[in-house]
Image (cartoon, rainbow, N blue to C red):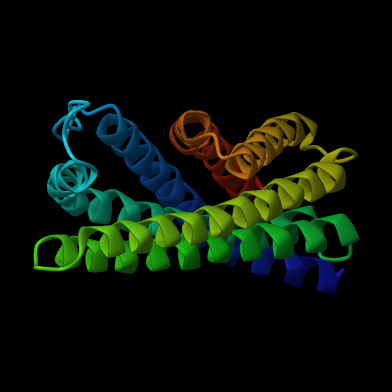
Length: 241
């Protein structure tokens, strides 16, 4: 009896901070997701320039990178917010492990995979931000534009590989949570978790296929809708635990 009482007291102490982290992550994901979508749809940034067929390739690349430089400040802001969101997701994953039971292997594995995937996405985003800053500086100085273009391509390819692995791990982690919760009082939450898992796994597949437009759509759906919903629901479950 004393052990059970101590566990309840400890759960009560962590429930408040856990819910705050979950709600903060939901807000950060929603802001970053919507801002990202508006930027990709040229609502908050200028539309990408159209280059005529007769323009030499080097001149066309210079025109493109002059435009790209103008989008980088906003990219830094919404990616910084997204990094904070993924930190909250990684932290919430371990609170969910405790909610579902540390002794359950699916809960432990789910927390490890979701946390690792979140940190991997952050690592890839830091690489992308640093690389894009370098590309912007190269494009504004007297550097060979083809070299700048090659470096930009390499950076984007590497960051896409990070994102692919990150979303695959997060999706697998969410499936682990759903398995751990299917025979508990959180069965409805488990269904939402499965939906998040499927969307993140499809996002990983879109990166593998190299379909940038579809990847952007899936990032918006997961970042602006499903992950905020999941974190809000998780925050409520943690508060009621």
